[in-house]
Structures are given as C-alpha cells and as structure tokens.
Length: 309
Image (cartoon, rainbow, N blue to C red):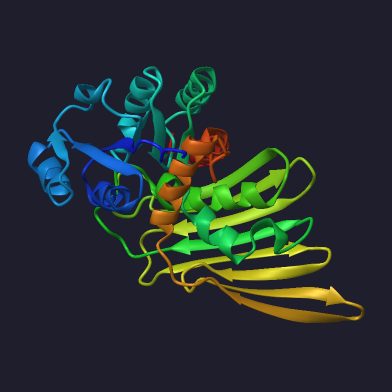
C-alpha cells in the first residue's frame, strides 16, 4: 500500500496584513504543516502563529534546515534577500508581488530557482480569477487591452507606489493575455498624499503591434477593477470586483453574448494550494518567477517614465 506523502513543512515570513492570511490558509491545507511565522516584530509573529500551533521567531534565518517551503509576505524591499536565502538552501519560495524591487534582483531569483530546481511562485493573485473566468480563451488573438484599477487611499502597502501596489496586477494580466514582448512604454503619473506615485496611466506597445492601456489610482473615492479585451473576433468586459465577464463574439453578421460569473471563492487559498501542488508534482505555477520578472520589468519602465525610479 502506498504511504501518504509526508506533510510539507512551511513557514510564513512576514506577519503583517497579508502574512496573517497566508498563515491561516497554509494551516488549513491538507498534508501541510505550518512550522513557524517569522517577523522582526516578535509579538506580531506570535499573534499570527498562536492560532495555528506554530512557532514564532524574529529572524527567518532561524528556520534554516527546518522547512521545505516558505511564503514571503514581508515588505517588498526585503523580498530579494529573504528569497535568495531560502532558494540557496533548496527551499521552495512563494513571494508576494512584486517579486523584488529591481529587475536585476528578480532575474537573480529566477536563475537561482532554476539552478536549484526549486519552485518560485509570485503572488499575482488576480490570475486565479482571470483563469476562472476563461483567461486567454475569452478573446482569441487580442489586439487591445484596457484596464482600470482604482481604490480609496489606505495606509498599508505604502512602501511602494501605485504601480507596484495596484497596476502590476493589470500589467501581469495584460502580459498573460497578449503574447510577445513590450517594445514601448508611455506613462504619466504622480503623487497626491504619498512620497511615491498615487496615480498612473500607462500605454504598452507589444512587438506584434498590440497595445494595453492601464490606469491605476489609490486616491479615488470608490473601488473599480475592470478590464476590456478586444480582438478581431470579439470583445470581453471583465469586472474583477464582481467576478463577472461579458463576452461578445462574432457569429455570422451579428454578435452573440456570453455572460460568465466566477463563483465566490477563496482565491488566496487556491493560489497557495496551487503552490503546494507545484512542489508535489513539478507542475508550472500559475505565475512563476519569469512571470514576476516580466511584470516587474514593465513596471520599472513605467516608473522610469514618471520619475518614480
């Protein structure tokens, strides 16, 4: 009789807003053991770990040799050194978006994960919903993507500007929808209440002539997360807040409408369960290190246009 796999030993690095949720989701997954939560604020680490019977520690380096995988939900500025530490020790890494602060750092992590044959997944969580609604099959051969992602101002996640906080989600989805490299970037944006940019509008031109127009703001009175994808055979309108898609497809001389709704679900739990599956089977993650690198590269070029880098 085949024995069940040994529980995967996982730690969460960072016990802030997202880190607490990561700990909760990992603790609920079958065949996973949440070993520890690490955060320089030890009391915060203890609060996140206690509910799940996990250890708390102030220094992630104390976990060397004790875990199979880590989930890095710490500040963006420390994604690179933490991920490098664990990848160098043959530990699989889930890294919240953005993968790192520079393209050079991201490329180092991608190369290191490949050399060590470890899973490196990036937390582009909107891929879960995008795929649930139909993903790339929504519109064949897309030529234009338009996206708006705006929200009220909040004090968390202000260690980065709106491009790396919000727009990077739609950068990633545009790259997932359209094949090819981005050959030109035009952007405008600026700050309102933060030290970094609070609003930005960008236009991406792809090697095949396709385009993406993206708008992001974190100083709006209401929340909006919409995307429109156009191609020669139809168009799709996605409301990522309401989890719906309305598709119009050419049928002879008319357009036929197809409405879809993704069931309410726990996208983070699905994302982290997929990470565990990739570790177990070697399957490609829903968004791997290369995806994170490509999104960061475009985001960095946008920031250079608006003076945010």
